[in-house]
Image (tube, rainbow, N blue to C red; front, side, top):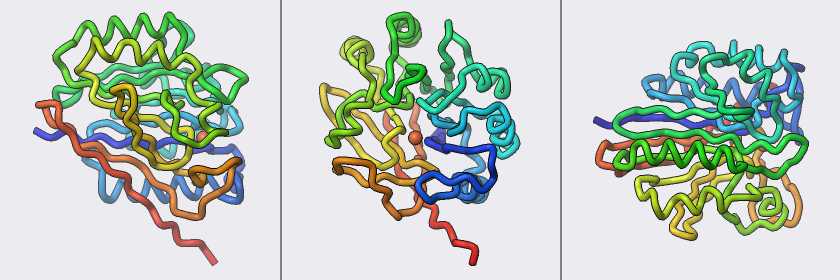
Amino acid sequence: MTARIVQITDLHLMADPLGELKGVCTRTNLQGVLDVLRRDFGSAELLIVSGDLAHDELLETYEVLREMLAEWLPKLRVIPGNHENRGFMRQVFGERVTAVGDRNVFADTIGGWRLIGLDSQLVGEVRGQLGESQRDWLARELAAAPLQPTGIFLHHPTLEVGTGWLDEIRVEDADLLHELLPKNRQVKFVCVGHIHHEMMVFQKDVLMLTTPATSVQFLPETDRLIPDPIPPGFRVFDLEADGSFRTRVVRVPLQLVP
Ligand SMILES: [Fe+2]
């Protein structure tokens, strides 16, 4: 049976309900995305939020987000981005976060698949880092289910996307992940956020998918951050027990209130 999961990323929510990032009200955008999720994807078995939940990193913002995601709580998973407070994330989302050392991760089994969330936050930096203890945890998780198709989610890209300023802020120790993959052929994809646009990169035998933000969009292949006026979006996966899958990005055109 097909298992459907949904990923949203880069919410950049703020305690101020009118708070904007690069001219985009992040709360309005997120609400528009959640309305479409409720209408068209409410049967999804898992909703993964892959980082940059709280742009202002305030407890109040995480509490607002928990309310906005209330109907998804039983099937919600959250992992950190660079704009994050891991302690508040644990405090507010409780059992929806698995603590391994100082990292907020998850590992679930759905539809015959293993879905693993990594914590790539390097506190105080925009770039990401996995660290050796998290690599060891991941190695154990992969070794425990070598025959189950697996998808890995994290915030920061592990491969270059071809945009210089974004490639400088990817995971700095991505080899810790990539070195595990040839021995773990059950890993079918790595899926990230952080760059605020959609891409598919296949390098080093790794398929990396990137997902647009629910907030502001960034133009690809630029020498600096340039907002892109295309609508926000999210990613849907349909996972088959034989390890095959389909994935697509859904865009959510938002009507501006006059
Ligand atoms: Fe972001």
